[in-house]
Length: 458
Image (cartoon, rainbow, N blue to C red; front, side, top):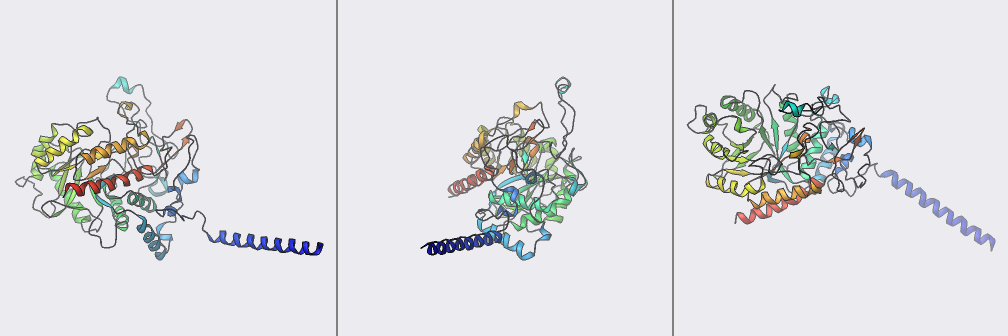
């Protein structure tokens, strides 16, 4: 009897040993950080995974915040890249080409640019010297201290980093955004706090093209948001639009919008268009203008920024093709006030103009304008964004634009953000929601917009 029991114990122990060995082998076959179960194949970028943390004082591990964990595009075999993209495409929602997001390529870091660019944004002065004297004069010191109230999941990244652009395009596709409006300055020109960025445009176009809905798709996804560069007038605008179309117009990712006349044309957002008088714009945008771009190979749809109500007549006199509102601060301007969107839409309909209201998740820029707290708009855990989308869709717009994908300085980004504390600085975050909550909300409202738009067009 004792021998029988001993034999049973030995057999059981042997069986358990075999199970342990098999389990160990199977575990070793699964890659570390496997993305199995991830609906958007974000295992390519482990730092983009959803965070479940609920304690606002918890830190994301530093390697997630500051390092790139995905292999560089050139380090992966072509078949691996093709396979991962094919899997990702199966899970992406259909892109909505009437949903545009403002995109900024002005960020830099030492690895790709030799220094930090824009993340080290200075604190901007107030126009009233008495108010200005209350605030320090300093620059931010990345990577721990950046010129933003939120902290990006990708860390203080460079817009020249191909893996960053790849991650951005994945996020945009998961949100069903069909078009990015790329902030653009002419070659060798820049904003007050950055460096020239035109040479980054080919990278953005190339990566954007990879994330079209399917090979050979007739829709494209990069429009140009022309900034108020120094010396912008009707003559330089003609030259720069010509440059954009000649240099980038042949790229398959270059966006063209199909107008009611059935013709597809490039679409250009013109930021701070009100800085140039209507008589100057008319020289470019009216058919009889001295430097008219109409009926030339460089003709397009030019969208003016509406700030004040009296700008409507100026926009009409200028010869613009549409209106957008940009600011993500409800009540800040006439154009950005939700209650005015239906009247603005009626004005556009009467004058055959496109109406493109700009929705946003919130607004906070006190990291660079510490005196501007009165214009802050709390995100209210996503409710502000939903309210903004609801107002836009109610107005029956032609296109909805999003301010923004990644304007971190003004806290309007929908890009993934993470909780972070550095010294005395506690960055805002998306808790109690996950890091991609604003991509999910965007995707939800894209679907609503598509369904509602079908009803209007019946």
